[in-house]
View: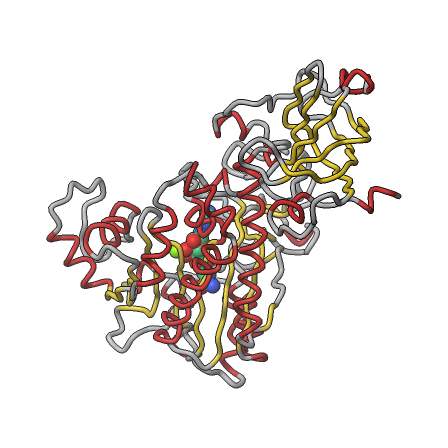
Length: 465
Ligand code: 4AD
Ligand code: MG
């Protein structure tokens, strides 16, 4: 197939690897077309980079196909690279061949003008063809690569934890059920649903976190990480919550909570540095069109030392704050976004790691401190977003863990026999955290809504495409 001889536009324009006068074949979608008497221009984007390349066709009357080419069409253009006369681009193509491969009719929604993000969410099947969503999609891929690079270069093994799960890691109960039972004809015994009749012979859900299985793998392999989709059925319609999101969860054997905080800080800085240094083109675009300050904000975080504040102290600081919080502050509350943002934006003006939370508000698996009242949880808070990382040192002492599970009202301890076995056979201190990948992307791009950094977002009442 001679599609294979194409030249990607990124090679011509960004990498600058193709010399003048080279014959190139470009395959892409038409952004605009202008047909004059002497000359016609087609602006083509092939997805390999943000930049378009312009094809110049002299004697357009010799190309009747031009009349059928509209914005959105797929075309093949062959010609020689010549210096561009207009400003902006270095090269254009003096076209000798123009093929219309796939027509687009005039109903194509992405005509040349600015579209609102709301409009484009309804057109998610084609929005990656726009400059903004093209840039978001490309940087998403690059940052995903950076995640693997970071851990692989540090000797962490990538483990695949299951998407279907029969346990509730976070204990928050906001899980999507996985079932093949006939909803019109649900098997019951003594009035209760008989889950033994269901596909897995037990109640099953989409996982909210890969942590529990990552702990098992860390006990065997030392340092591991997961990077995959997780699901939350919480009905919170905010700009930062999605029902399906990707999470990175490192888990380190032989590590305490200080090691955990060190890793969280170093990892975040690495990703932000990677964006600034390895994704210059996209970052320039976001700085120009989405958020003028985004690069300075990332730079400031890279240069900062994260403030580490015990929960108790954070509460004292918030109580003294002269702010009008919607949710009143007192010891024992779960920090709300307004509190988190106040701490990181107003008080410390840099990322903050809050640690040692009251036992009551954190899940069963966190290590209990000697005071018996607090657990070794951490939340990393960053300006603009609030919580971006949640994690902890894990409870590795069998007796303390089973006691705490009881206290939390977990009546199905036998279902967690595997999690407890790890504490029975060669238990060691270990720690880990979860970083929301989509929140990282919001941060890096300056995009304000999580729905605009995921290609096909899932949120309450929306799972189209
Ligand atoms: O704080 P969370 O719930 O922590 C856990 O799930 C732990 N089991 C992780 C671990 O220790 N291995 O979630 C971790 C991070 C949050 O800080 C946030 O960045 C992101 O996941 N997150 C969400 N991102 C988008 N939409 C949602 N609904 C999210 N819920 C959590
Ligand atoms: Mg959390």
